[in-house]
Length: 166
Image 1 (tube, rainbow, N blue to C red):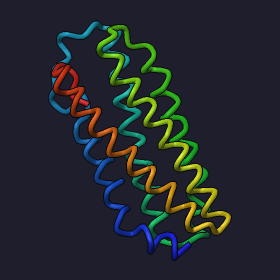
Image 2: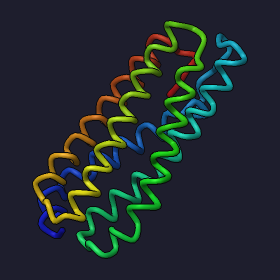
Image 3: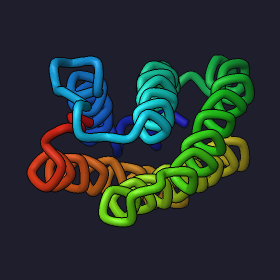
Image 4: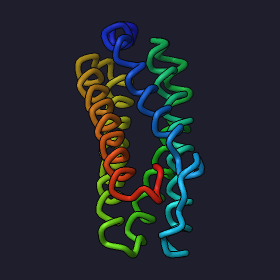
């Protein structure tokens, strides 16, 4: 486990940074939603809340992983993964509820990225439990790529739909 954490220690801040960037750019962060339908506003508010919850939980999970203490990680990974799964599932369901097609497209991309990140978290968890340092590194790198992709999608969304500030 220490080998896994040591090998990825320089990468951990990227995931945390990505989480913080998304959390800092949430829809309650100053953007107007005046051009959205009431239903889409409500859906986006739910997605925003779940993104913020995901970001809090993935930061805790990342810190536990980076610490390199396998026993401590095992105590935290199951409840945190459960919370991440719930957030991911809610984001997936809500993204499908967005009515405007042009607005729905980026949220479907974001939905898919959260699903892929959840899968990477599960693979990291299993790799740590089975002392598979290489498997954990590969899955963690995937987690980072998905976090970076979410930031790119969120930036494009802000450009194309300034009324949404995810």
